[in-house]
Image 1 (tube, rainbow over the protein chains, first blue to last red):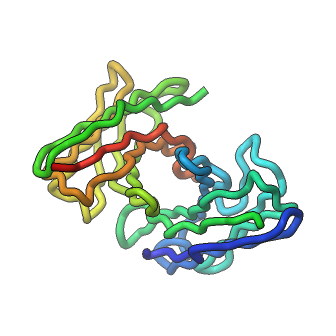
Image 2 (cartoon, chains in turn red, purple):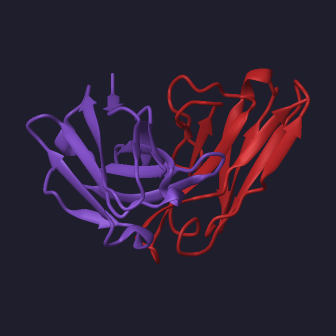
Length: 109
Length: 119
């Protein structure tokens, strides 16, 4: 993928977990990043937009940040219902389209 | 509330074409671009392209150029995605997804349509 994420992450309930998203100057370096949560067997839903803005209804346990050509999603106070796949998504000027990271499967141990 | 309701699952033979529909409700249809994204079983998200329901302008991902056609019907607030020359590798969930207010990116997703390509 043009934008890369770790394939997996894990943590125990109550822990803080961070998922990274690494890109380049044509995507993350120039545009804000979105994060999507995909629970098993369902469509993705918007978790974070504008790199660090939570849509209404998303708990403040979720936070986002961006620096240079990388972005990250942090989940604090990990809960069992956070077990899902997480994708970053961003516009890419070189490709003239949206690119997604390969996804990170989060396991709550 | 915003709703994107897609057509049902379908099975196609290799070489055939498929048309997936996505009916929008709960917002002004022509004010928001619509994207199509697909996801093969157990795989990640792949952007296919987007259409401007207002003027009809379209941008396709390079990997789908020549095989995908996106259209819209403003009278029914529906967008369509037509994929031709289907191969087994095209077996996937196909999602329509709305582009939100400026700076938001994709904010709402349809429920997905499973297209299975099998002889």
